[in-house]
Image (cartoon, rainbow, N blue to C red; front, top):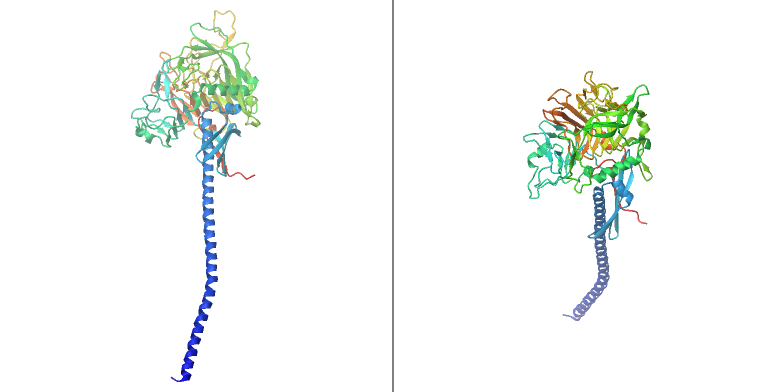
Length: 592
C-alpha cells in the first residue's frame, strides 16, 4: 500500500464517521416533536373520550330522571282516578276541596289535582293534572276524563223474595236470549264464592257487547269460575271492575238533591193525596204526567201535569219488593219491604191539570262558571204516574229533552216513545235530539192496569158512595178493553224509550205471577213483550216476567245516544272514569 492509498482510506474513514454522526443528530431532532404531537393527540383523544363518557352518563342520568318523572306523573294520574272511583258524589267532593294529593316514590315524587273541567253537552268532564319530579326532571300529565256509562247496570243479579237480606233468588239468563247491550254486575262478595252472573243450565245466551264483573275471575282458592262459560261473551268479559254506585244510598240521595235544587221551582212538586180510601188498602200521593205532541201548536212537545193525585194501592204480589228505606251499613246486603203496588188513581176535582211546553222546564246545570246545555227537569217529592186515558196507538210521546226524578216510585201506565227519526228497527237515530230520563229513589215499574180493586165504571161515578160530597174523580190509564173502564190493558208490545235509573229496588213489572188476578193483556198464560230502547240501572233485579207463565218477555236494546251525556247533570252512578276522546296530554313544562 502506498502512501496515497493510506491517506485516502483514512480520509474516507473519517468522512464516513462524520456522516454517521450527522445522521444521528438529525433523527433525534425529529423524534421529539413527533412524540409531543402524539402526546397532544392522545391527550385530546382521551379528553374527548372522557367528555363523551361524561356526556353519555349525564344523558343516561337525565333520561333516567325523565323516565322516572314521567312514571311518577302517571302514578299520580292513576291515584287521581282511584280517588274519583271512591267518591259517592264526585261534584260534592270537588266542592269540598278534597281533590289533591301527593305520592313519594323510589327515585321521584308527584303531586296531583282533580278538578271540574267543563261540560260536553250535559255530561260533566273532569281533569286530572299530575306533576312528576325526579332529580332535575319534571313531567306533567293532564287528562280530561268522563264517567263511563254502560247499558245495563245491576247492583246484584238477584231478585228479593222476602224481607231479609239473604232472601234473594238468582236471575238466570235463558237459552235463546240475545243481549245486545253492555252489562255491568257489582261484586256480590258471597261466601262461598260463586259466579255473580247466572246462566240457566244448558243454556247458551249470547252476550254481544262487553260484560263487566265487579268480582275476580277466580275464587280465593284459585279455581276459575268462568272457564265453562267464557265462549258466551262475544265481546269479552272484564273482571275486578269498580262497583257502580247505584247501591250507594248516600250517592243517590246527594244527586237527587242536586237535581232538585237545580230544577225550576215551578216544576218541583210535593203531592198531597187526600182522597178517602178503603181501610183495607194503603194509599199514597202522586203527580200524573202525560207526554204528547201538540199538532195544533206547531208540533210542540208538551207535558200535562196533574198534582195531588191519590193512588189507591194493593198490598203487593209475591215479587213486589223494594229496598227498605233505612240507612244500611252494607248496601250490597240490604233488607226489603213488600211495597204497595199501583191499582188506580184519583185526581182532586179542585186540581186543574197544567199543560206546559217541555222547553219551559229547561234549565242548565252549573259548576262554577261552567254550564251545561239545557234540558227539561221535573222533580217530585213523592210518586209519579206516567200515562193517561189513551189507546195503545197513541202512547206517551216525548218531544224534547226531559228528566223526571221522584223520591218515591215511578209507575209507567202506558207505552213511552220519543218523537223524531228512528231506524228500521225502531231505535231513535243518532241525530234525534229527543230523550227521556226516569230516576226514582224507590222503584220504576210497569203497572198492571187490570188490577181494578173495585174502581168505578164511569169517570163521573162517585168513588165512595158513602161520602156525601164527591171531591175526587177516577183517572183511568191505558186502554179500555170494552165498555167497562175498570177493564183496561196496555199495548201488546210495551215500549219504553228512556234511560231508567232505580235507586231503591229493581226495574220490572208489578203483580207478576200472583193468582188469581195476573196480567190479562193476551189472556191467561200468555205474555207480551217489554221493549226497552235506552239504558237500565237497578240496585237489585226486579221481576219482568216468568217464562211461559205471566208478565213480559224482555227485548232490551242500547240507545247509544244516552252514553254521550244527553241527560241533564251528573245523574250517573258509574264507578269508572276513562279518558275523554283526545283527552290525554303529557309534556315537559317550559323552564321559567
